[in-house]
Image (cartoon, rainbow, N blue to C red; front, side, top):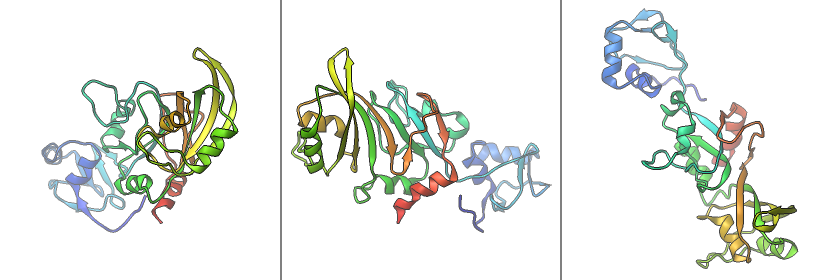
Length: 250
């Protein structure tokens, strides 16, 4: 969190933290519910520094922050969107006190894909992480039909042509173990890619004659999915984790 000398209007600060609209906050101030450095305010347009001044609402000191960063273990059946009139979205898994910051998913996971999804309201960081020039690595574990071996490893390392003719960047494929499922013989694999084409992992396996039947993202950039997070749960990133992500800004 960067703390600076820049001041902001009080109503903007409280609005950012979800205390209501500008008119709501104006009413709160007129009713004497807001204090600044121990003095009750009457002007909701007062300039103050949210990091250095002591702002309290109904006697409770606020803790200001501009950005939020969350690691979500996305379950199947939930879409990577901020709103939808028919489907449950990833924001439905986040409490109201964090939704007021207007976070959004950085990239997307398909509805039937599980795992690591980053949520933030830091638009610049999201742009950097999704930039095709940055080649941010993303690692997935999957169950795919049939036996996967040296042939597929070599093809992925060279790059494969997708159904639209696009040739992927080199990817690292690791075969973990055979799996027996309802669909017959399966292979459990781990794949690291450094781009984010639409349905890319599924299309890569289609290109080599196989099919993904289960997919989970386990890492993005330097961050690995916290194995203590149950499906559908989240946690905020530590300051150290945020700084790791910001290395992609350089």
